[in-house]
Structure formats: structure tokens, C-alpha cells
Image (cartoon, rainbow, N blue to C red; front, side, top):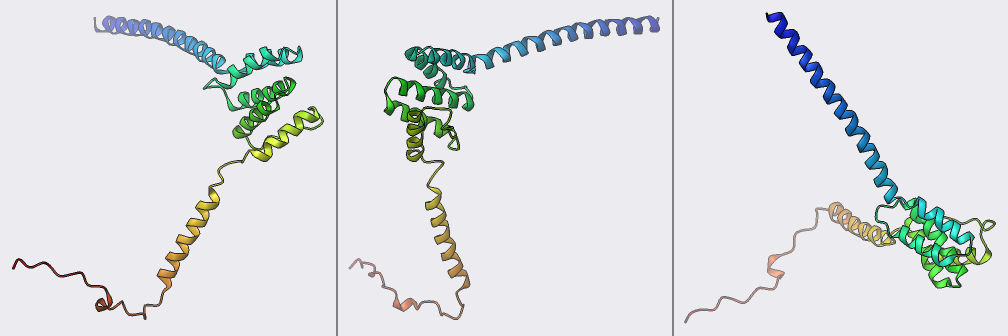
Length: 186
């Protein structure tokens, strides 16, 4: 009898684990679908393609709206935003809004200040405004100069204090200004 009860337990545990395995597979499939869908919603790829098409068809307002939607997505990748800002700059130039184009290029450079445009691939106006944005946009934090200078001064003071000769006597306490005495209760 012990053998039968043992084999029944084994069969039941296999059946339960088989059901568990099926549930795990279903869970994994739905998780992958959910993650892929979430990434697609955060991506700007569709907007970028459509905006490029609208730009090519001289539908600049429609392209601008798509690109603004893309750059305002919080979870869009920096790479997508960079592409969107570049195209947005070109859209603004096409609409004779060079000031807005300059701002779009500066926003692009804030994401990656090493970006360059190939002067043979863009119009001279686009290239000129982009170059101007590079001049105006500072890359990184320029406070490093102040921080480095402050650290150097503090380090110099520490070195001077630590390397002073111990031959100097400490200051005489009698040379210090004495506080007034306590008032008396008389």
C-alpha cells in the first residue's frame, strides 16, 4: 500500500507542476507582449518616421506637432529626442523661424554636445544656424573651473599648514584682547 500511495503522490505532483509550467509560460508570453507594447509607446520611432514624411511633403506644421510630441515623451530615448530636435530645427528653418531652430539645435546639443552635422548633407542655412547653436551652447558644466580652483586653493592651504616648521612658538595668550570682566553685583 505504501508503494501505491507514493506513486499517487508522485503523479499528482507531476500534474501540479505541469499546470504550473503552463501558467509560467503564459505569464512570460504576456510579460514580453506588455513590455514590448510599453517600449513602443515610449519610443518616438513612429512619430519620427511620420514627421520625416510630413517634412518631405512640406507639411511643416504636421511635422512640428509630431516632433514636439516626441520630445515631450518622458521615457523616449535620448537618441530619439536628438533625431527629433534635429528635424525640428530643420522644420523651423523651413518655416522661417530661425530663432526657434536655434533653440531646437541647442536642446539637441544639451542631450549630446558632441553631435555634428555634415555640411554636405544639410542646407547652408541649417548648417549655419547649427554652428551658431554650438557657439551658444556650453557643453557640460563649466563650474568645474571654479570647483578645481577652490580645491587647489584649499589643498595649498592644507599643505602650507602641514609643512610649517614646528619651530614657531604658539601665540602668547597675553597678546589677545581680553574680554571685559564680569559685572559685580554691588
